[in-house]
Amino acid sequence: MLGHTLVAAGLALWLPALTAETLDRIAVTVGQEVITESQVILDLRVAAFLDRKPVDLSSAAKRQSAQRLVDQLLILREAMDSHVTLPSVEATAGLVAPYKAESDYQANLERYGISEHDLGAHLLAGLRTLTFTDLRFRPDVQVSEEDLRSYYDKLPTSAAAPNPSFEDSREQIEKLLVEQRVLDALDKWLEMARSAAGVHYHEKAFE
Image 1 (cartoon, rainbow, N blue to C red):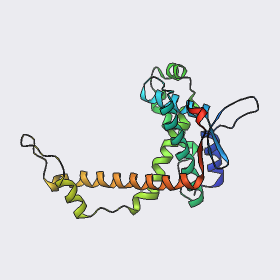
Image 2 (cartoon, helix red, strand yellow):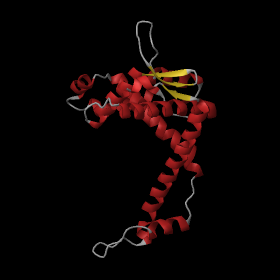
Image 3 (cartoon, helix red, strand yellow):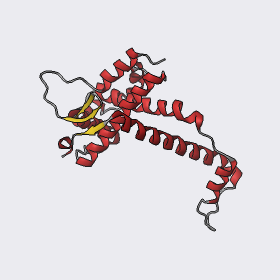
Image 4 (tube, rainbow, N blue to C red):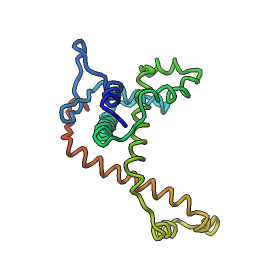
């Protein structure tokens, strides 16, 4: 079970506390908790590292990152409250390992202004989101024969490249529909969770 110790450790890893020496702008408040502008920027730096793209610090990118961090915080809260078992900090080493094997790993960390700790925290947060989504929503998703047939019938067709038969497509269609409905369930839950949590964005941090 995911106990208070694990969640506290996860929050400490994912949302570093502000120190007296650090002046940082608040980007989002989630009830009594805060996400700072520097945390948003760090998230964008790690995302750029993973995508091998330039760091995007535009207002739109900052807002998208902030919402991702809010959602991760809400998921950790819910996991603790509902006793959902999520990956622990110990999983970080395995997540980082493929990147460490790259010859330019350290140089890229420096180029993007991030640390291995930052990378591990980002990857762990993503894994926890996936795990929570699967454990919380996938068991309740059901796809009927009618759903599968309806999806298949709506697939675009071409005389030059006809679609595989329904039976040959069945497994793939079922996977696609299940994934779609799991994500829809997550989106609906997050919308309600954000509303209940009293999420407030501080606009100056996104200028």
